Image (cartoon, rainbow, N blue to C red; front, side, top):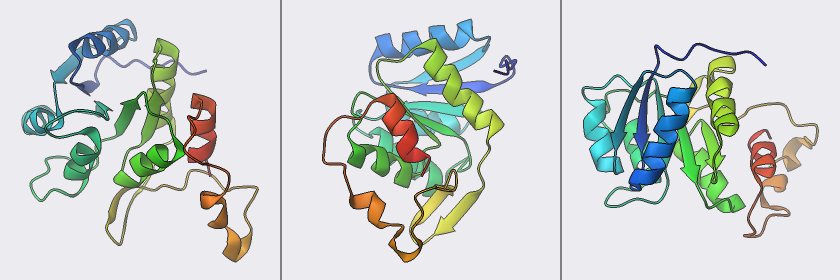
Length: 183
């Protein structure tokens, strides 16, 4: 595993729970990050982006008045967005398949299930560094290319059938989330 020097990266941590923000910040500092800015919701985070050059955003899903998904959409497609290309890691305790897909389809780069660990967070940051993704505009979507790897299950015109098979609304493990996002 490659070890990266993260001290020059600017992280924006967006979470309405001050204890979670402190935990994420503590992990980032342990990984060598020097510059972290915190925001308690999506609206505050969007304001902060106007003067803080975030290299990576770590954003919780459930917040108000502007939740994580709406924040991601605003960053990606807002007319006054200061950086629609910034990588975003979605952080949440809700890992149902439909939520993972919704986060992906809103424009997040990575999805991290709670509870988090330094190893899991570093893995997502490393993924952003090692596998940068082109941005695409397709219909109403603007964000990182959602295709991560060629699927060995590809079935020609039936390839999208897999999206509706199997899932239900059961919780997925982090490994299942990663496998789902790799197709």
